Length: 437
Image (cartoon, rainbow, N blue to C red; front, side, top):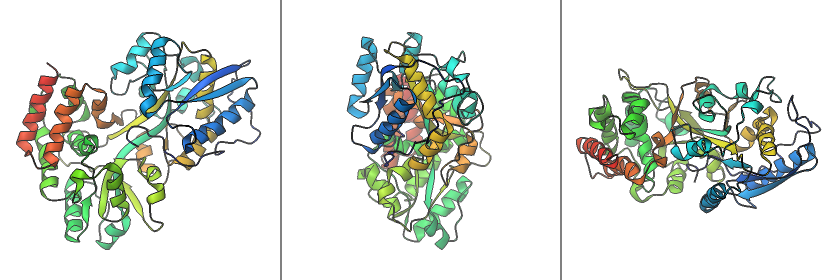
């Protein structure tokens, strides 16, 4: 699922070839030989795995004596990689094992145990194509995500995802609508779309985090993300949070107005996304992986547009923030060849490789000066602000089940018509307090 892994499956073999350029950086290390392992989110034979095979072949040509071994570590195999870290025999290059963005304790514990290789020295050296140190090429909004609180770099960013609305340009044009910039404009557009016989929003009712996205953003605009992170951490009460009741009321209005596509309660995420591209719904709130994930199902004449979640005039929350995430990659300090792992991450970050990655996958690069995919220019521009990012799903997916359910299941009940706005506020408040003891 795109929400779990932002890498997008497309045929990418050979996309990263750089001709005869064999220089990996302005400070190319010498005598890097031996076998090292690189974890793939996707299994052997998949398009992303083939992409990595192409990269591996070029890397081996650049460093004679080095051998890249690809290892599947996604989906059901994630526990196997975790077990290898615990056993002291981890792959060199891994996804995760560092979780600064949402204060993920499972990420930080590996750093605190001395198991994650510092990248600070490598980050201080110039990166090919950028004419500046590696760390300075990383987008400002991403830098704090790959460093510890003391400024040490422990991870390198891969793809960036952002959460925003996608809309059907043809439907909007036929109704004389433009992309909404404020919440009242969003409601006005939804009313006109609904009156035309098209559902305003496609959504899945079988995956709670996708339902939660609506309230996440309303709370960001009404209350501010930090307030909600404090609530989830047990530092504040949800019911007393300024703007919380209003945000829940906004969502209740959307549900009670019939803005969501018929049958959404039993529709899975793929079917919901397909309904959008089939013209059955005019808008969908989704991650930037949507286009790549559904590429084979998008009609040739479909015109898709994007817009940021609208602002709420007069509200005291964050009106410019964006929810999103960064796939981070780490090097295991206890692996056999950590130096090769570090050089692999530098190689992947080179500008020409980043440009090819964006072109092939539709993902937003985590690096400055790499053009964003069409339609995501505004989101990429926001990432130049150091504080632009907020963790997708408020970071709650890494929390204990009791915490996730206290928030997520209350949102589900609101969507399903099983609770009104005041009851939802009270349910979230009481549920989080109980979960936190």
